[in-house]
Image 1 (cartoon, rainbow, N blue to C red):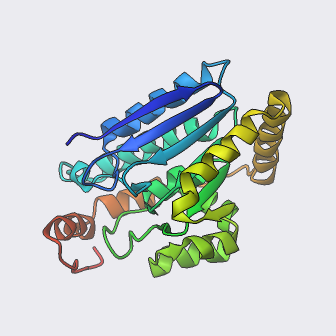
Image 2: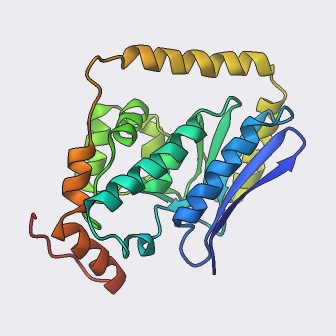
Image 3: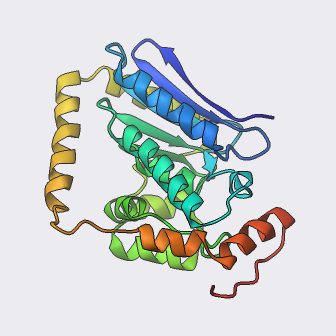
Length: 261
């Protein structure tokens, strides 16, 4: 079944839903485009006071649909993909009202990048978080995503998460500061609703000022006359035989055989 992303409204609360049945809500490129459209719709709304982003059917999002990579023929495709999805993440992070990532189930790869672009992550106790690309696909994390993970987790834990390719529990993510609150799965929906209602009832100008100041402080802290360039690394990974092998192995349900080239 085709995946899709859409925005629902209930008074001052907007909910962006990620749905790809049978794929744990893995995002196609069309779904990323729909997510960008949802962000634009939220930005143009004067009525919304808080936005929830969540998956359906017991998952948040299991990254990008691997089928999208089967048509890649070289490094240019990888660069284009990372720039396209990176733009969507920037749009999500730039939403002026508070954004809550309601994570119930896996938030992996691109799914974790989406969750980390929200202001708060609330997780059910059955959630898992990780970016296991070094074990699965052999592609590359762009600089902006790594920077966001370093901000949310700390430099050491972010690097460890990527190098070990582990999936961490919701409790561990809470200990590291990535997750704001862990809720029992049975109380998850009600807990998300309570939080959204509380945030929606808060002073909108205060919340907008908090988010704007947070962005300004982050920009000031990261100000650098030599911005981090990641295109050479993206090209090296996506243009490699290892990446092609990772995609084939994933689709064949087998362990990839890495060559380092």
